[in-house]
Image (cartoon, rainbow, N blue to C red; front, side, top):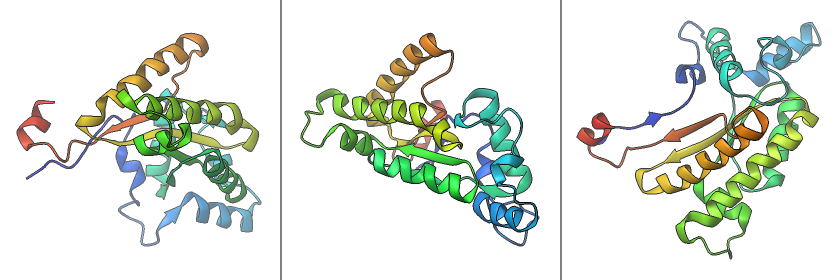
Length: 199
């Protein structure tokens, strides 16, 4: 038997679940539609003051997740494979009025770098994911939306990929004062229960 997931998300992962007391499933998108019908106000305008357009990290991320939990909406998360899918996510979030989670996988990072590039030691996966994250940092504010920049389901064998991203995040923090990514997910579901507990 395997333990399903260990997550390094900052804040409460429960924020991505529908509110227990709600009989109607909410999303940032249908909240935006309701707000537009009544006040012409988009959902992200109703977010905590700490949550601004651009990549959301630290306290602002915690505030965003807590707000989603309290209001009973989900933050859509989309696995991307290039700047076209990144931009499409942010465009949809801007149009429908909600925050968005842009999610990188190891394979998606490699795809951004180019599938023909040598991926020895995860070099292409690391470089592509970093390039995609930097793209989001450069353009998210132009779309006027808050973006959670997340890496998804890193299994134990893929830890060198995350190590490379953490090194880039430290470098980014030293230059800008904020991390490159909002959150990382460690998925140990393929490992024995004892090892999950030990980690």
